[in-house]
Image 1 (cartoon, helix red, strand yellow):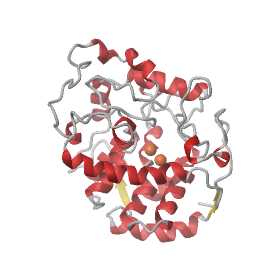
Image 2 (spheres, rainbow, N blue to C red; image 1 turned 180 degrees about the vertical axis):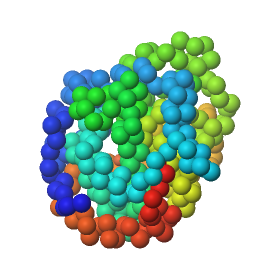
Image 3 (cartoon, helix red, strand yellow; image 1 turned 90 degrees about the vertical axis):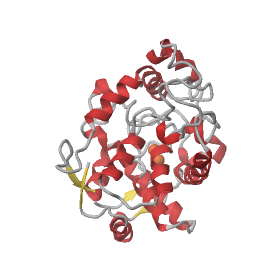
Image 4 (cartoon, helix red, strand yellow; image 1 turned 60 degrees about the vertical axis):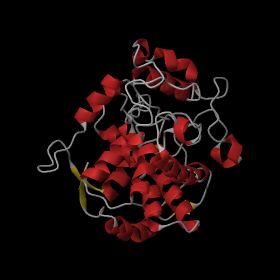
Length: 301
Ligand code: FE
Ligand code: FE
């Protein structure tokens, strides 16, 4: 695990401004004239293909038998972290670095701000669900190996499946491409849900958030519920940043939203840092925290 420099580059560099040149308002600008074709294509395919049927397919593919561990593989957090060395998120207009760098930058930002240790752990692992790229197929939007492969079920902003897709979602012009939007119930305001049923009952577009949440539950991780919610909903921008879905969520979810918003600032604004990261010594700090929250040693993935 050598040291890594946050300023190293990948061949997938988007046309957007370099992260190191950005002001806070420059992050997450999505516009067909300035956003790279790769990011636009990511969202077109994601909006078209993420349906309730696809969610069911992925839930089945990644299901876990807690007694036998059937269907899953054993791997340590450190192994997963190292495997992400070769993965760059094609949906992110602000980041052309391996995800591993982003995870350490996020965790270190949270630590520097004096936030609780469980939140530092959340920063370190929040995107580790992208590890699905190791087992994914191009047709399922989970090919993170081929630089031109589809990643629309790994990363990107999510939305709620099975109900009307809000206009506040990124690239709303692609909403009509979603097959579920041809169904009278699925395209209605409440869709398949009942009013204020709560976030927990809603199905998000499948990606690293949902997978990682399920992985942590399966491994009996002891991160507090607000930390698990950050991991599960950090890509649900229409909800946490654009106030969509208030007709489906409940009061408890508003409290959760506060935590997700707090986390989001670290997830976004640590991406422009060019510090050298000493992985070895950072790991010596973080590993005992992983152990504290039940994430040491071999885990089921
Ligand atoms: Fe993420
Ligand atoms: Fe992130």
